[in-house]
Length: 459
Ligand code: FRU
Image (cartoon, rainbow, N blue to C red):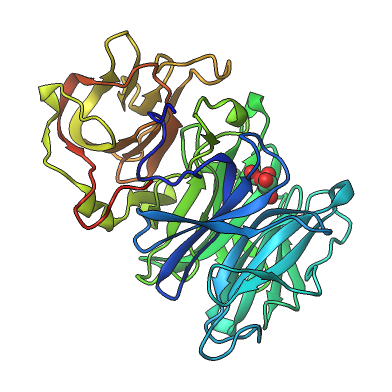
């Protein structure tokens, strides 16, 4: 089997179709990643929740399918929490339950929110009185994300309802009441709202809340992308502080969708994983035996910039243990397998990762002071007419440009201006990229990302 495209450090299913990450949770010392999964083909179909676990967010172990479709429908996206105080009563004091809230997508498309739980983190029971949030009459009503609202010592939940999100509250994760809605006012991106997440972030001015919303946009609008709002959650709804309608995008590349953050992350971090694909061409990705890969775990911060508060992303510090011996980018040698590049330079500059048959991906900062990533010559362009594009966005900083890039087989992630500019893109060269071509005033190091002795390679 041709495995050259399968990322090593970013999760992908052993076989068959996957889309959105679901139920990201840290529970009893273990990270859980569930995902939209069709176990019988490499195309989207009746959705299950696939499942994997990890101790460090880098080495994943495949687990049995967690949730199967049933008489209420397929198992669409949702979230999970560690109910440490057993507020649901579904566990006992020695065994806090892992509780999942997900969408049942039923016959005739009826969408409602249901609950499942597990005491051992591997086997799941559906709550016998599902749904726990019935559909009030909407066509789209899905993707519940649960959070703990410490100020009122209770749970909150946000879900997507067509052209807005709705908020609910609960003491026990089972009985939910509606508290408010946000949107469509304040939104200027087209498309159906999906996979929201809402969370507090510390800033120099005190706590602010971020609302992520993935937008199922048509191909004429760039396909599926994730936007965010910065503001406050007042216990009922979200209040945006973005001054004027202006879309803030989480990622400026084509392949970052349905990204949500972990519940219960122990280090006070906010860690996001997204689906590294795009509905425009997801079913045409030329990977063998599986389709759909997750992003790297990305640590988010909310930082002041000249244009206001922006999310910035960075790789998690445990990536450190994967680093091999680094060398100068001007040596023109590209390590095989997964690798990272740290760059510092003065605009304009560009870096090409290339093979011997004229295929390359190019990135850097251009004459217009834009950070860019260009995959128009990166290999297999037959995937889709919209695959071969160049992506660019103005810098948010002045002065020297800091860039950080990771290439994990078919998955490239680029961070610039201290992570306030992120680009995620898949690449399918017909032969591996093997050398680096550098142009401009730029220096940097290239580092292979390899397995340390403590961690055997994934199967
Ligand atoms: C987003 C999405 C969700 C839905 C799921 C179905 O990519 O459309 O809104 O729950 O995928 O697989």
